[in-house]
Length: 398
Image (tube, rainbow, N blue to C red; front, side):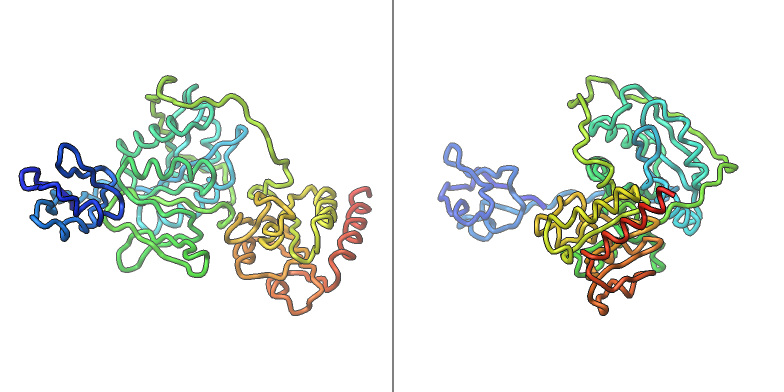
């Protein structure tokens, strides 16, 4: 649907100018013109006294032949010379989708000197690896990675693409989806296959996390989505597995990239690398004031753990948002999770429920966190943490 002005009929009365809510009409040479800001709302059509503004039906788009699209793809992120955990997590879940749809599971590996990482993808269950290796792709770049993935999709036509809801995945996932003309479900926390249609069902929080929405993509391919890190567990790697390595030549040239990475500055230490952490010590409102977070950090230092925080602690300004665990923060799945002075609101539980072992410290014996905890300590967290830290120090020194 589009809005057009019949210039021969227009009398330049200006009635349309006052009713357009988007300021999408301008007067030039005593005639009305529609600009790109028009949303085709139709307010001007009903207002024009001489019916010079018309709705114009656009040609219907020919339905996509979805039978040409097959296989489940997982985009593998590379960081510091190894695969990031989110890619391996998605291979485990992608395997389930591929088996349920009767299709193959493939990985997309983009970078420079990364061919050796293909074996990790095969060990995680990938049947194929599409490898694009070039010096221009050594560092992530929005332009080059978008063009590379778009080229792969155009040539090989996957049915499903899974990407991590990371900084990189969020950056170019939407660009790729727009370029291929499909939708993208962002920040998913659940995947499945819709029984009625056979399409992938993408589950994500909606309305501030108050409800969970399930979304399908019935008309366009590929079906694309970004998935939160640590929502799913990594599969057990089996290096006896083999697969098909498909090398694809890169078409990227240096002049195609509008930006250049000059340097990488680490603004946060390992203590806030929550997605990759095996142990996390998190503090909440029960820490009472920001100075008391030093107790959390002391325990984390002894254990070699990362430091997390509840939303209440972050909102109070006690810790930066990089440390927030929860539905509106980071989703984590460490081997051990310490919840220190955290009551256990449903939003926080949603962000750490994948933890293998949960240890909770809270002076309220009825706190919801104890229902999820494997071990619970009822007591003042400000008194318990120093004792725990000292005991772990003794164990570590021994």
